[in-house]
Image (tube, rainbow, N blue to C red; front, side, top):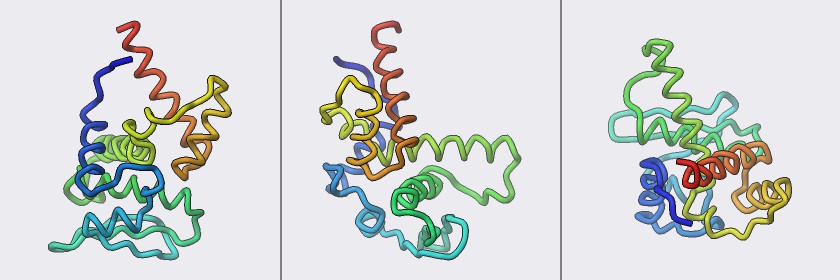
Length: 160
């Protein structure tokens, strides 16, 4: 089946390809941040990102599980790569939009379409979700949302 990828899917695939990441086993915050020149620090507080002069930092809550840290890394990376300005000074509706974008980015970044398409998934939905969660190192609910979006996008080919 052939369907048109979104700009976000193309952006993420190009980013990964440009830094030599092609397989789910390569998906981890330390490797990705090193290749992108971003410093990761683990803190006892809320995950966030900071840009200062020429340096970019992502601070991840050290008390979270590795799967949640991975998901939060992707969320914060979106802010660094695709947003500008200080969120504390943004109007509420703009802040809400950026958070929605970062959540969507995280789903696609942690479970890239070009890698998801290569998986052999069962027709049993719960088993497919478990395979995705394990393969990409994300929480079950996160994998479930990503699978739902991917299936809807693929179904649009038939109905669109």
